[in-house]
Image (cartoon, rainbow, N blue to C red; front, top):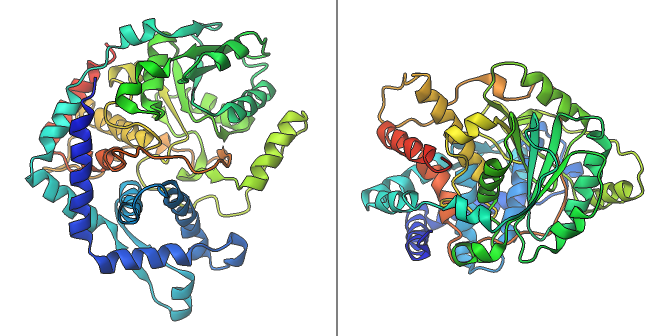
Length: 441
């Protein structure tokens, strides 16, 4: 298992490095930009503002997640989050800037490049390798799980990890009963990473009109390494070992979709595509608290729900590589070949989907000998357009919930790792991929 002391020390080193490099003036401009976007969407008319507004509002939500930490780290966390997810130079236009006909330039790319460079020169990579070499004993972990497998070998398996989300779990399963009742090729597998098996046992006693598998992974078995945190990466890997399928959909319990989502997945998986993002625009539609409550009330009362998205579908850099998460469809065979997710590196509520997507890109880059890059560092292994769904009208809707907590001991580590991967040489990336392939064997 993971040696947390190493990661905690590395996390502190990351924080100190960022703090020493980004400078107070840049941080002040960053916070000014944040404040400018703390504005209701209906008050914003300029289309450039609308495009960036969704990024900014999401980041403000991330800001709130860190309220339990010290103010200095609180700011650093948000800078790190922004660098990790967008990782390039963004021209971020604020409402005030529009009036002045000027642009607020926040060069995240240069900042994160400087951080990566400094850490690499200080042998951060040794810690990265040491953590990578820690191997989880999946067979022993699975022995402690309780399972209720009603559908073996489905064609499509929607995997949803759950921890302390009873209300969302109930709402999600109710929604699935509306759209999966006539879909015998589809299945939902819920894995509860909970302290007790109460939720598992309660659902086990119900009969659903769609295929449902249930797994309880006792949290006590991983508490030593991950504290009270959810580890979505670990949950997806555990399910992949227990339930075989043709396609698995790694999905969030608080993300809803309509039948168009299913149709899009079915159509795209008729091709040779190895994985895909099943919704358009490379962005998730975040619902506010009022709308989320209305949706759940409609579900409870068995009333129809209609979604109408009024803002432009292609906001949030739709042509950029990577995944914002929420739902990733991947061949089960491919998932096992690349070693699944990396729970040793990423846990809590962090960019595990981003890291997994990057691993898929690198895997197919080298497996298909598309190593056309002459430089020693591969920065964007973006391969094919058909893994996205920009041509469709498929949306993914995220229900509101109170800000989630980050890992209090090492908040920077999980955020930094997906960014750090981008700085590795081709040989280092190949080694990472080769080691990962053995994890789920």
